[in-house]
Image (cartoon, rainbow, N blue to C red; front, side):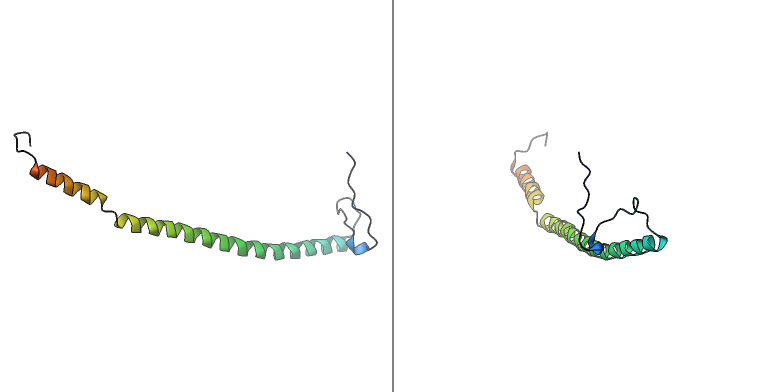
Length: 99
């Protein structure tokens, strides 16, 4: 496989360089680090905002499911109805020594 090299540009400020292969001065390396740091800061603020929004959305979903579960369980009368039916059946059933 041929090694891919970036095409030569007519504009020297648009060419990509590999700092590990190029012989750069300390000032140039310092400038590159500063530019990378600024790009990193810019991207992390966007990511932080997205992460906060995503976290709030997931938290709201969880709280909604939790609240709905409590609401639906509080309205559930099935066990009460079954207990009442069993009570009525015991009262109407025949009286024997086993009861």
